[in-house]
Image 1: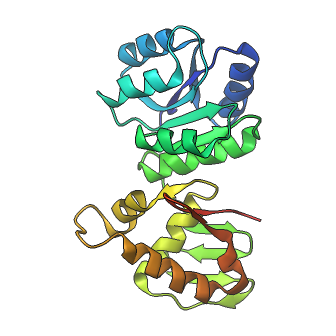
Image 2 (image 1 turned 180 degrees about the vertical axis):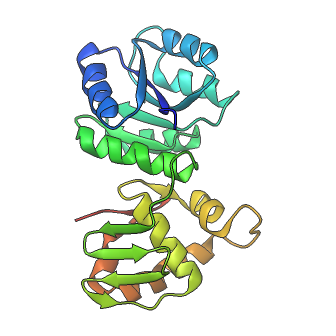
Length: 225
């Protein structure tokens, strides 16, 4: 299988090198841009970019402008990097169609994990048959869930929801994304059905249910211990 290509955009060469080194160790091909204008040139030139890691604060053209323009032509996954940790900025990013929003400083290993989660979500990486996070084991082939050594019975949708949270651990997920991914695009019901399923899922998970955090005004995030 060919290596997936990732565009890393940051005006700090040290930051680009750090991200590039970790991605290459995980078998990704990396191309770099040092500002927004160069990023857009590469985006139009390279037709097979699988994901973009994009800094917000850059000369010439900032990350927001780059994201706006890219979204006019493509749904390629975008991870925004920023020195800020303002909730309003994060919400703005999601409104622009950003898939993930990571504040500096960050762990390169966590960044790689989020890259892989997004690529799985967009069907560019093969799904794992067994997911293990913080004492939670989801076996997709056997359709079983074990939490802290105890078998837990879940409904079909609760199982799909938990698997989706584990695959995207650490990533803020809007209710719309959850609906589209777990209930599929042909679901026309109320997004509040997610809140009901999350409530039931948390209850069945016991103490581990606390790992599913509510993000006000957006949705949910599973935080690994």
